[in-house]
Length: 212
Image (tube, rainbow, N blue to C red; front, side):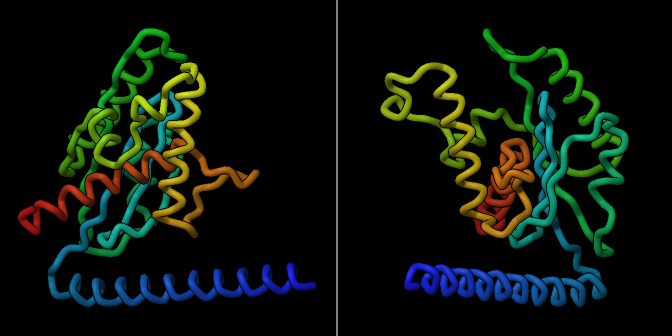
């Protein structure tokens, strides 16, 4: 039937687009591998959310999604999980979200501060360049905050759900083929936000290099 044919064409177009993206990404990595052999480092961007449901995400120097994972319970394992495997002569720049406690928080804020301190300590030992940033700052820059009109008439729970959905939608828009979803096909909010945090740092450093 016509509907089935349209779906098949849509699926075929989607697969061709995905394959084109992969070929493009492979081409970028080949060029960077040559440059790495000549001594030019490849700079990757990492976003770390040390919260209750913490996550880590890694982007390449073109802001393409590489991987995301839950924050390890033992932060000492963060380094090995983050860097294996990576090409030689690779630098990682890290954006680390600062903890923030507020009234009515649904989980123990002490856990978030403890995670932050442990992750910060691990990163200090690695010597990686780290940028700490408040959630309100990077989310505003990425267009994830709600305006008064957006949140008018909504309960706290509804506003929270809307913010989470906005993060999921933005991540899926930026990385449509990235493995960010759970087994049920829902984009994992913690992974999405870690990737968006990394994207914030990538855009910030790109603007700095361009003198904007």
